[in-house]
Length: 429
Image (cartoon, rainbow, N blue to C red; front, side):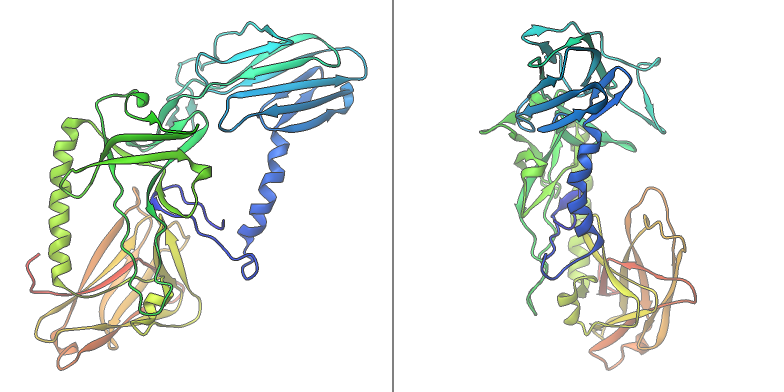
């Protein structure tokens, strides 16, 4: 898999191993090998067990061999077996992740090990950068003894459901099951107009969750095999507020589907307010669609060809948060239909979260005449937004189509264009 977005209403992006060879393909093969570097650490008379994965290792300085078996990721048990040249005293530090529940257990040869209280910062809420981490920190259970061949350490790490919110938005969160992200299956994999003349499928509707309970297990229930869940807390964000059940599963198991890993959360009272806002937005989009003469999706090459897409050098497709667009350092253009009986307005969609070093500075031309000059720089919080450009009537007089061209200024790029629309400027909006 080439790209694995963790957003809302997104899909995996795959590459053909026989025809694609980007840097990400090499990284994808390299990553599993790097996982082994963090499994075990050793220093002096101490051995740390950091991750629980089927593995073998040799602690050469101590003459110790380790073999770990687990039923992860869906299970919750791991077993560590020791082989030693001769008995040896050392401290084994077993990781206790922050996400485990009170059922965390460690035993040596069947005897339970007494555990200290979970570690916490002085404030009780450890800071990670500027973000106040809302969970207990991880810790280690230390076992000091003389070890011999055949000793077995068993650990139980129960998983529970919880929310992990975004650092800057506590009302948007992922649903976690232990260390695993749960992805919501919201429909078939979105087709992207791979056949000439085929319409681009619209983005899927991503439900929100409405609940008055902070305990996730109250509204997310197990369904079938381990790692599968379902919830009836979903609501359609289309102004109707229709109920929608959502099936969730461990993210790593979901393929060739449209999914979400983050969800907007509302209490019932908040939802009544938000539902009205969704209804107003749905009406705005309905009016905009009624006023539209033509709409195209930059960045989807097959779809762009229907509008006579042309470009200079250093022009590329982009994708941000699952949304395609077109970025360039020279120029690119499209032919868009017009209706000369009406004033025309061009609407372009940009994104304020682009962190390129040089702010975009470019012009927009219609049949060679400038109708707009645009600068796009990073702004927080990042968002998609529309900019309108009035098209002078003289430029569409007696025409059925015009060429819309985006042209970079010297040493500045063209901001990625995520949507382009020609509308009747006199339509009710």
